[in-house]
Length: 418
Figure (cartoon, rainbow, N blue to C red):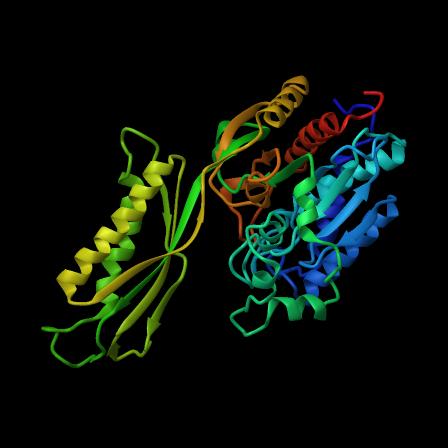
């Protein structure tokens, strides 16, 4: 354990509250969407904090912030800790931010104690994890791992027409470093709130994440024909009435595919757009997004096939055209068994009640795991509420997560004199 360095859960909590004031919302949450002025302000505070404990900052061409603390052996691959500071429009204080500032607390404790590690340590704030303003999410880590090209990321447009690269330069946070250099890290560790109720309901102090569920996102377009609201119902090709049972089927497919013999999947419709969106016109076009997730790749494939089959049925029955188009896919991703064991050993040694679990939610760590060894540590969050201003954790949960993160990271980096 890291008992010989002065980790401070109280200081971590104070830092979380101070960062939350940047972009703070009336309901107690945070709005620091990526590449906004609030994002720039949060980055500047993080830079001041990092430099105050002797860290050297580099920023890459996608805006990823990377602090470095040298180790005794510069030839060893660095051990990275990180997450993200950007939030949803009505986000909470902890999603992503906890992982970044817990990493900062580890760096502060090392600086105060004068302790050394054999391998260098990195602390990373990834750009645009949330994907709230620019889609898809996790662009900074995805670009660094070579899953997106730099040109692709920099050309992305927000709904208001803003261009990613232009906004990155406008707020002053486009650096010159090559983001793909981060593929050379020896390990990556991330602390995050669970964004679910499993840990709280089970009375667990921390979660140790063993793998990430597979995810498939789709875009569905239903096209029919506009009709006056006063016209007779017979013969209508109402796109919304056709889309409604298809939207409802998403939940049914998630709960029934591979069940009851296996675990249930997860299905979400997050965006619905209706054209022409007039009170007295039966719509001619409906667009909606579908997010499907499962811990079994074969079941996830079957969920997508079931959605396409339902769309074909709706098309025939309603005389509309329902098209299902794959938008994005993330495969089931195992995390590193050695790092998982280090997190497990820490929780046992500290007497923490831990639970091993998958993540059903995308994180930067999931992209990193395609290239480097990764583990995630979860803290409980009240009611499983996240992406919400009411998002809440306790200082005790934050401290437990910090301790396990620090133990696993510093065991990996080789804390001198442990």
